[in-house]
Amino acid sequence: MIEAADAAVAEALAEETEAVCELHRLNADYIRAFAERDIEWFDEHLSDDFRCSLENGRRIGKAEFLERVAAGPRVTDVTYDEIDVRPLGDVALVHGVTHYRHKCQAASTRYTDVWALREGRWQAVAAHLTAVAGR
Image (cartoon, rainbow, N blue to C red; front, side, top):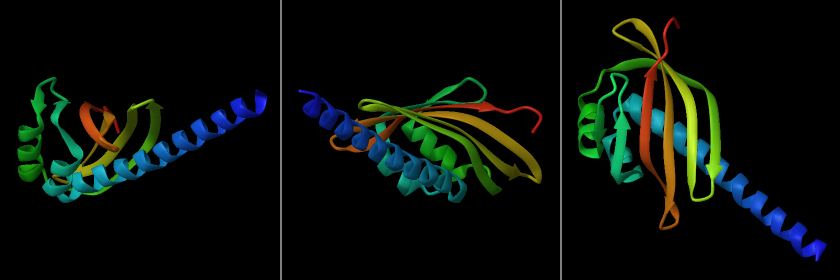
């Protein structure tokens, strides 16, 4: 009985480790796509019911998000840190902070992205953005 339980725990840990690695990769791609205004990447990886809460509190759907990215502010020197990937079964939270320069001004945004495992692949279903003061 104990051996079966140990095997189940090992399998669960391996699956969680795989999910965390995949979500770290997706997070890095998400930030790259933002910096490069890669609409095709977002169109493929955001769910059709994606919602984003902007820094000003306004909520937008996928179509407007794609429009904003396409027209979006040109940013440079994009980096990110404080990444925390939290798998919760078929849903995961990814928290982090992006740092960038926009119009020669340094800025930072704290984000939480919600990912859902749908039909065997992770899709972003929501994002929440908050400006970081004083960075």
